[in-house]
Amino acid sequence: MSPDELHSRLLYVLLGFMPETAARLVLRGTLESLKLPSGELSVEVLPRVIHALEPATRHFMHPAQRPRLTLELKELLNAPFRGLPPRPASLPTPVPPPPPSPSPHLGTPLLTRPTVLLIRTEADATTARFTARSLCEELGGKGFECQKVATAVSELVRNQLSYAGGGTLQLQPQRTPRRLLRVLAQDQGPGIPDVALVLSGAYRSKTGLGMGLLGVKRLADRFEVRTGPTGTQVEFEVFL
Image 1 (cartoon, helix red, strand yellow):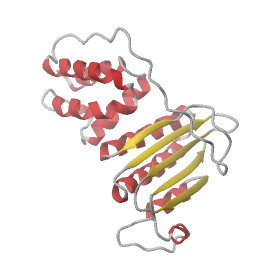
Image 2: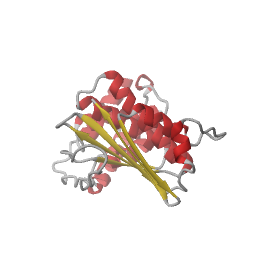
Image 3: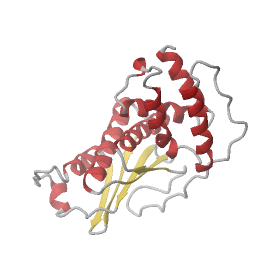
């Protein structure tokens, strides 16, 4: 079976559980996390891909759907040369997270519900970066604008993994009165000492602590950070 056929079959299964944009995003992010170009997909590496796909989908589907997705992926693994698996007849409607409380400092109340991602592994970081870029593109952002968003998100989630053991990332698109993407990153780490010094650009750290935060501030159109011994919250907006 050719790499294109395997790619199509994996995408077919995912499309039974999520919109096309999300399905392509999950598959692309999974392959990147495995450092596996789509042209190198083969029956031999299929078990690795399926193993990595299952956790990558958790941000895009209702938990009640996961057992059925796992079953369909295993059917594909056990019989990759047979016909495509049937699509699910009906699926529970995903329950979106509640909208965030608007910040008194950053912009106006938002009109669409956020995407909330749990950051625990490098694969989660890859998913976050691709999700941010995808949302930016859906809002009509230009290439350099979406690259700014993806870079800033990458810096934030890398900080979360390196210094706080992970955290959460909330991506909130806004279409009116101004198109923008708002990002809220939260963790329960030890906080950032001398945050004002870090953001001034004068701080130097052998570990790199704080340098990513300064990069995010420079990329963002609006930026706010709150930090303390119980964790850090970074909120920023990029105008599109």
